[in-house]
Length: 469
Image: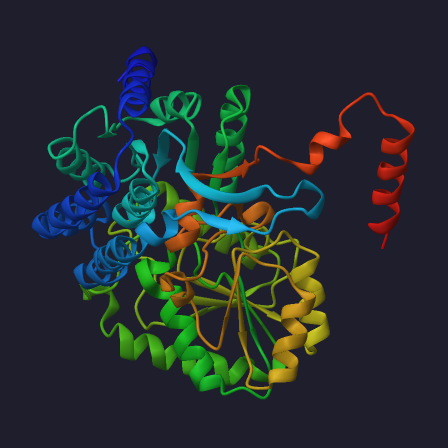
């Protein structure tokens, strides 16, 4: 699709929205239809994702994409009517007897750009929020996962009117054109590097953007915590989709005294989770050769600078099959590329810092992460950590699963993104919180109009004095 065609599609959507914004009944029907078509095409979506990766556990796609998407639709259908209710607020005393309230209204036509690592969830989950808020939408799945992009396009376009919800597919040039359209809101999931380009493309139109990015999410292990349990939960979160997850733990911070035990436990976890890993249909492949080469380059750079690479499997990586086996990397330094960019693979560096203060200082000196994982049972230390760090989200004593909490916002901060979605927060992202004040026929403010007589001057001076703190 060319840029003029995209522009024409957006104009048609905006016109249709102005003529008939989706009613509550329309929204409910659309959410139900979306749920139905995802269920009806579940196997097609799973097979398309498998094809994109060359090998990805069907159970992972079902558990990490289809199930949370359906549960989010259920949550939205149950709650969005309540989210739309107008809410009264106390009026300012000097404006009595006026009343004040706010209500959420849809923005219009929004653009949603998905991500290849969880194409189904990261394209359709924002759509759930956009529908619940009452918007029209145009979707652009990632071209890096073309098979799943085409299935999404087919099931969306064959079930929704073009002027309401439509999906387009294409290469990076189309993505560039897409992000430069004057949407009423633009939602992007992807890398920090591309996020900067998206924001720059949206700026000339003053299009508001939500950027769901990534970054280096640390897992901090306190010396008192069970290394066995920490290793199990960290490796589980790390190895979903072979590490190609935006909230995967990117590196570990722990005292050097824990290294040997963590290595032992991590090897045991990999053997238990993925026996015979090179022939295991439940261990995903790297998405393409370029990403595989990038991971190899990170390892090579670290090794040349003195890092120790530990294989967690008895089997070896294979570029031919895009199999990247899990690895720990010890003796890392800040100068290594592996500690400077998001890894997005099954490689886990270990940074040895002995104290909690050192760990927090390191995290704070670097770009704010999308997720922060902390393993400790001491409430006082947990409270201290929360007070002295900043991240998109926090999960204590586990990894990854916080993003499945529908009543919590999900989103980054700083380099890891801006804005939130999921549940009520996603509804708010695609809405305008519109303030309304209703004035009465008799109002105190009428006495404050010019001309400012001596009596009015005294009244204004009195008002200023009684509001002083």
